[in-house]
Image (cartoon, rainbow, N blue to C red):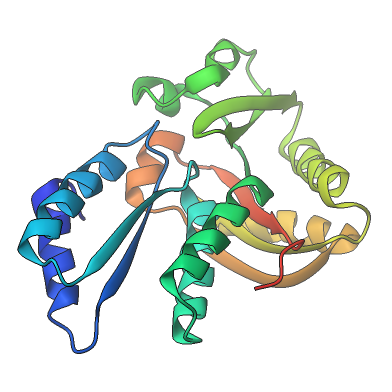
Amino acid sequence: MVKNPGDYLSLYEKLANEDGVKEIVSIHITSRASGAYQAACVAQSIAAEQIPGVRIEVVDTRHAALCQGWMAIEAARSALAGRSLDDILAQIKKMIPVCCMIQTADTLKYLYMGGRIGMAQRLVGSLLNIKPLIGMEDGVIVPLGTARSRNSAYRMMVDMIEAAVGPKGKIKIAYVHVGVPQEVERIKALVEERLTVVEHIIAELSPALAVHSGPGTAGLCYRKLTLKF
């Protein structure tokens, strides 16, 4: 895993040594929950002196998980299609406000212990058997509500998406979980009843994120299809 400026610099140098690489876009998890963006910026400054023929742009997505992932996927697709770096940067910027994460788990203690609780601090003391829903706004974890059961929490997720995109609204969606693939299948079934899913991904959260959200986490990262790339 890339952890510090030296790691990023080595990666940028490796990419720069590949034939024809003159531009690199480095897409990162929110700077308000991780030092990765700052480390990449330091590496970018060093690289400007050491590999001056390569343009490197570092992006703070203000998101995490597959919200950040959708930006990386679409940027890669655009790069393969031959679009310019400036076009790709503009594309990512437009995606930031239309990507959304919603997750639930049996407890928020892992976020609390990891210091990633953000504005959802007040939900830590919720009663047992209450399922908190959390999301991310401007790079910070925020509370979205509570439910009495997982099924209720999942239905609330779908209600929130429908309110944002409209009935049968078109979305691309990633279903994410920590060790509970059966739960995302339940979410997926509910989503597909009421929304138009153009593309979907099912993925386990990476260890770097799962350690904060905890076992049993289930949720989704979607983006509204208002943009044409």
